[in-house]
Length: 240
Image (cartoon, rainbow, N blue to C red; front, side, top):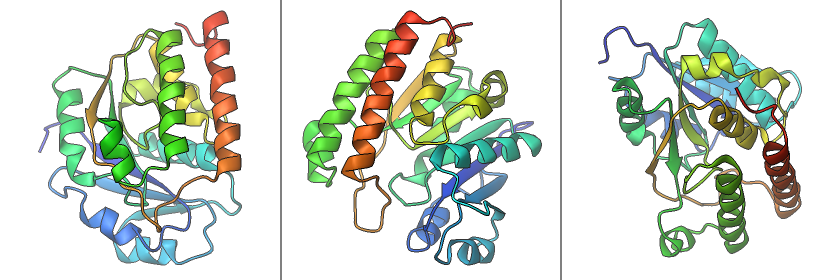
């Protein structure tokens, strides 16, 4: 659809057998050149289903973590000469049909990075089963991250993102965390380097089969994010 632009979807996956088929079926086939799934040592049939769906599959032999999974995703996408990389969770929490809007904003030169924000209104988020503690934590952490970086994003913690290849090549993401705080680290490095970050609203989907970190992991993630914001404020390591 876009001349001279190779568009690759990468899917970090862990025990996504129940949701993978629905997710892949909604990816706009006329737009995407390749879909790569990285399995983080699932113990269900994620890989079997991915192969059946015709995806390119990479498997971690041990569970290395969400951040480590994304690192492999981006390494593979760049090695396959992707011009635009869309990171999409395999748990159907995010609507793949919106990918074309992400790509259009980047191809037309408006933004270098696009995010899918689930936080349009409090009512919508809570009515679609986002746990209250996650909603309020998301709002608080996003506020802190905006204040420290000078951004004005509605959500820093989305699992649907699109990057120009130049962005990924400029970030030493292999040096970042293997855990969930990887997402915030990426955005802080991107903000520090002056790349343009845009966002569009995406539907909120919380349901039983969708992956979600528990309260204990959420608390660890929250404190790690606050420490990260503090580091950004008083350190130059995120800057150009």
